[in-house]
Amino acid sequence: MSHSKPSATPRSSLDAIRGRAASMRLPAYTGLERRDLQRRHALLQRLIGEFDEMPGLRLSLAQASRLFGLSEAAATRILAELTEAGTLQRTASDFYMLRDKR
Image 1 (cartoon, rainbow, N blue to C red):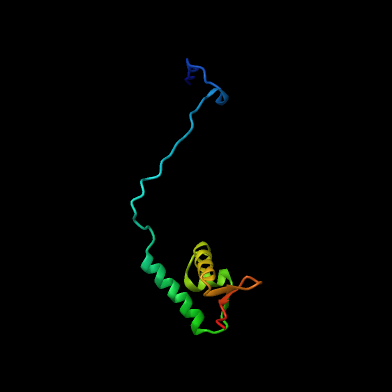
Image 2 (cartoon, rainbow, N blue to C red; image 1 turned 45 degrees about the horizontal axis):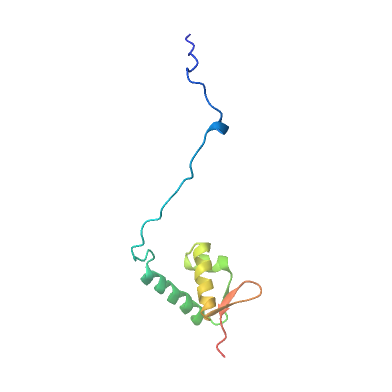
């Protein structure tokens, strides 16, 4: 059975290690859009079309996410955009529905 020798260099405490601030740079802006804008536009039109075709349709965030095959984060952004644009309204009970156009 062999025993390993203790290291000749003593190990220092983590408290004794001095670091420098980490820095990170973002890549230069190239002007290219990362999102697929055509697909996004088609999705927005589909959402609006569903609400137009079914008067009185009310969807919760989770229901909209499942119906349109979106993550809840994506559904949140899209429903918020349509609400801000005045296409949809959000009820007090957190359902989304077509805004009354009177």
